[in-house]
Image 1 (tube, rainbow, N blue to C red):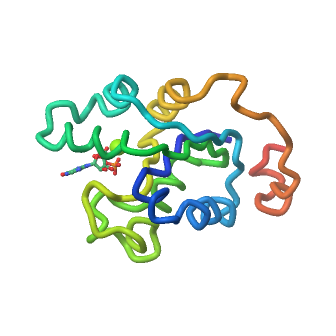
Image 2: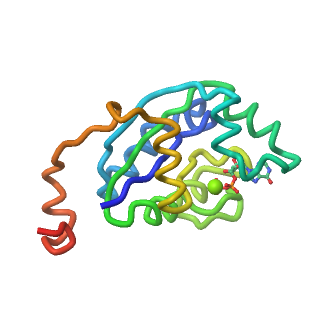
Length: 155
Ligand code: IDP
Ligand code: MG
């Protein structure tokens, strides 16, 4: 099983979409192992969006992401990183596949409701950046028995 970081961005919180978005992850069969609300500061956003620092839209992105609190989640499942990226859809909401979060809710290249880690390496770094060890919960999700085959669960 793998873990990935999801941020429900300020636009989704402000538009009242958080519950519906959390539901999408639950109904897919992902396990919530961490969840909290936090207003992200510039220091953390500089680290998180390091790869975009030289882009002209970077200052606007930081302003948007720090405007109000976000909801941060860590989700667990088999190949969780790529599964969640597909559920979220491509960056530009206007062109994202219908059925994906961005395809269903977004018209924008910035206000696209959700951040999801891009690969396993990024997920590990991002989870460390936003969550303390004691904020990640180890519990058995008994529905996994009905979500996966026994060989997929490694049992
Ligand atoms: P991703 O969120 O799909 O992984 P990235 O390229 O990593 O996309 O960009 C991070 C975030 O920066 C995007 O989700 C979006 O909010 C914002 N962003 C990306 N490209 C643009 C742009 O061209 N204009 C404004 N904001 C952008
Ligand atoms: Mg990205």
